[in-house]
Image (cartoon, rainbow, N blue to C red):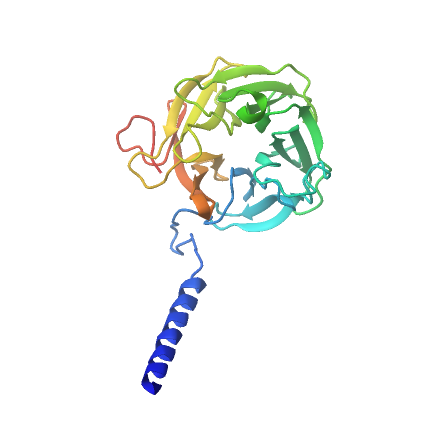
Length: 321
């Protein structure tokens, strides 16, 4: 009996030591030799968007019904990230979120820097599109402003054009709006606080690109670009749309898909570049089911004014993670 007790104690101690060792291993994406491994954020940061200001990168992600809301992360290299603030201390309206509502609230925010201020926009699928801004991302953000009211309006992103006009692209939640897989664009006031133009549908993902959502707005070489995922969160892919007119018509191209990789999705993200303008990168998330939505970073290049993301081994313009 004594030998059994000692053996049991030894096995238990060894098990505890093994568990402690495994628990203490924190995921580090930076390999310390100029390289990194994906995901760069092995944590639940759904629907990431990123903007660069000088040498600094800022990321925002969906917070749904959690408070504080709209986490803001900072990095100097796109790999090592630190939480620096939250853009909203509570989800509005407060009376509607006095009890937990899984999956509701803050959906797919975008972050942009314009006229020396940071702007964050997001959609509440039951209310409309909101905005908050701050001169210092670590400081106090302004109270949330309703930019466009409407049930089912989601996944919005602004674009300030060279002529001073501003526009916003957004999606529709089928569960609230009665339609999905389409994208709309409307004109914003120059200060980015309210919709001033009629909503125009600029892209219909049916029948090939169903569940088109998560749009991000850019302009490059005279083209307006909308980056957006389609096909669903877990099995989907990334599209790039382009047009010489902000309201379209838009050409479409599939630019990133799982292919033979283990990275399902890849879903919704952001284009970022280096301060010298010589490198382009793309952030997206991977839905890991119970483990949340981890953030990946892929190399990106431009070929014939189309983005090519990840590894394009067969040269068809659609990369894999």
